[in-house]
Length: 186
Image: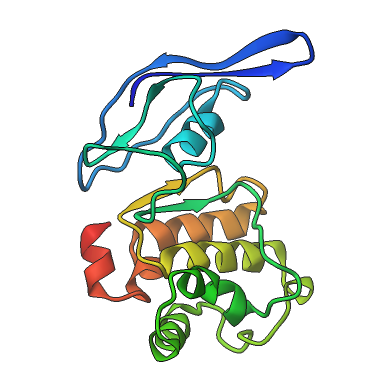
């Protein structure tokens, strides 16, 4: 990120969400952006993920300017956004379907990724908040992104679920379901 700036316009006034931010992240690094509510953390992640266009400056991944959502980036949002009309398995498969992976490969990856055994055909309305967030996380991880952006994905969960998901993510249990290749890149 070089001299990254994002200004939003609210009626007649300009609101600088991010101003002149520069930093570099290297392979195998785990980086946290920390700051008070409203300081631009989510905006920075959205610019890295190609969801928000910078007002000035820019983002590059491997020397290529980000314009739109880069295929090597996975993004887990604050809220466990799942599609209510899709089952757990079909929610997890969504990114693979957009990438037009063969059906057999999609089914294999989803089967390996489902961390909610017995709930593969359940709809989101029947799941707890923690379970929905796990589905959103699996949907992101199953596409094996080179870069994983996480915007406080466990913030709205109860303490017990939050601690368990943090532990699973950090010790690689969630990554393990996707195979050794992904765990080695994380």
